[in-house]
Amino acid sequence: MTIIYAILIFCVLIFVHEFGHFIAAKACGVKVNEFSIGMGPAFFKKQKGETLYSLRIFPIGGFCAMEGEDEDSNDERAFNRKPAWQRAVVLAAGAFMNLLTAVILMIIIAFWSGQATTVVDEVLDDSPAYEAGLQSGDEIVAVNDSRINDWNDILAAIGGSKADSVELTVERNGRNISVTSAIEYDEEAGRSKVGIKPVVRHNIIESIGTGIKNTGNMTVMMYDIIKELITGGVSAKELSGPVGIVYAVNDTAKAGIIYVVYLSALLSLNLAIMNMLPFPALDGGRLLFLLIRKITGKRVTDEMEGKIHFIGIVLLMVLMVYVTWNDIVKFIVPLFS
Image (cartoon, rainbow, N blue to C red):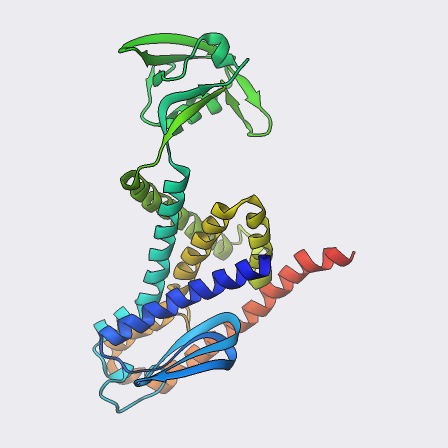
């Protein structure tokens, strides 16, 4: 099942990315010669109109081959003959689709998990909150006289507290009352608690906002990691390739399907961000050359750009070999030691 999950995730995310290029190319009138999922020899081919659709045996890539994408073409519908803004739209469409996929998956997770409110749903037996007299239905409005807006505020105020007790202001039957509760430390969770669970509601509008917000937080986290890699704060040995992703899928699958969905969102966003980096052969690198050629005119030739992108592809393949070797040393070798 792990292999099946991993293949499905790879194929879906690659399909989404390449489909973004495909629909943008068609919308801009660019001729698409082939749309393929997978790499290596094709085991399925179907010609429909001007485009050949194919499936290939290795589910680790894919491509949308456009006329005039990597060569000079005189076809009036060739990619290289389209206005710069249309070429930019086509190049950015793959990353945009992966970003959109990540947002949708994060919205699904937010709706599935629900939004914790400030209303107490359950007071655990023999907990400090139970001893203090908190009741189901109490709405917490302040912690230590500090106004709170959501459940995260409560977690932050109580979870990070070093005190022995906490004062909670709750609304009960239309009036505010003050309750002082002891605090106990949860070793497993690594934070303090009083022993209450919130009412959780499943609201699609709130889930959309939460999903977008969490995707934004995840984006900031990924850019911080990239910055740390560049500055040396994080070792390149921490990078993972396909083997590491398979093991990550295995671990998350054990935790439940919702964690697989979260990993898929993480990978989709990662694919979007990495593809937009200004590195040769990546979509971001091609966008950078589009800008450079717009500014410099014909001083940067198709042949010159093609050679630079080829060097980029070679470097990316070297990086792939490196991270795959790291994964083998990290995950496979210990199985035989």
